[in-house]
Image (cartoon, rainbow, N blue to C red; front, side, top):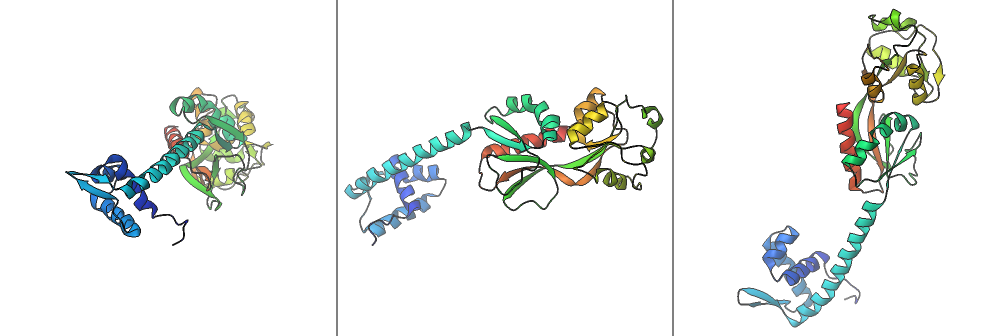
Length: 297
């Protein structure tokens, strides 16, 4: 036998619990297994050693001399392991949770909800990182990334789907063309200069197809590098923009923007992606919280 060979670890764990609790029944309850399963693990160790570890004493059990020696070593080892594991979990939980997302999502959806996430998930200690393309092979310092994206997802990321994306036209009541548009069907937009972003050139055509309309006849209106700039231009009354519904929910509620033609689903989804190397229960907590926010908005 190799002198550095370890005993069967499941059997050793069962033995340590029985020796510490002085009961097979109590050990089985702690380990969430049956009484018989613990007894079989004890026999496995005794067969390997060729000597008994316990003897019956009245209605209970007590350690033999060799059992006591094994308990001293196993008890110390398991206590050190529990202490190390507890410290590692505490350190992981206390570390900031770094969330990456585009500047537009950051400004239009995440930041307005920071007070709520801090209230609802105080243990999260959320830190934000503005990144336009966070799903890279090397996630760097990110614990998760919030995105609007369509499958397939990169293989090195685990994706939690939060909600389907829905997009639609929005316009400010300050827009000079609004009086002529008010009460009109979506077909009237075909003659309007439409605000757009370079990052979503197909947003208008996709929405028009969903409304059974042809591609816009009018030349594109001003283009903007980011969705955030596009929506600020719409709020300023520069034209009709198109945007995901959750990003304009607060503006619609306040009356700064109007959405008279509704929103249509796309092939994309709101997703929370985590690097596969990351295992953190806070990811599930944040995903559930975001699903609730997106569902209510």
